[in-house]
Length: 83
Picture 1: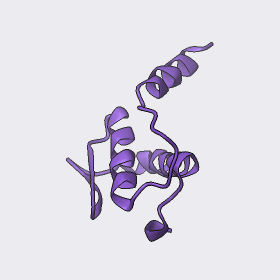
Picture 2: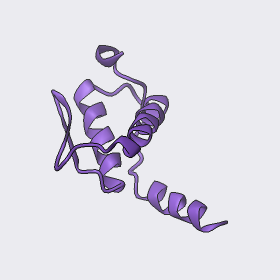
Picture 3: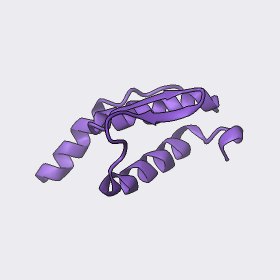
Picture 4: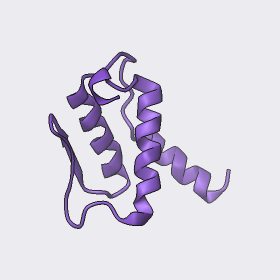
């Protein structure tokens, strides 16, 4: 296992696992924010969406944000209200 793989494994081990089911839109936004915070992207999820602190999401972090949304959607499903 190389250093990058080890870092990914450490980060994934910090993501809480929840029972797979259809999340509400608010739960989905909160989950996205929780994972973004693991990557030092200041975010808070609530009923109105994900809100970013500081300067928001840098351009170089946009692919990460998209990947996180895809992974969460695959694991838990994207709420119908957000599709």
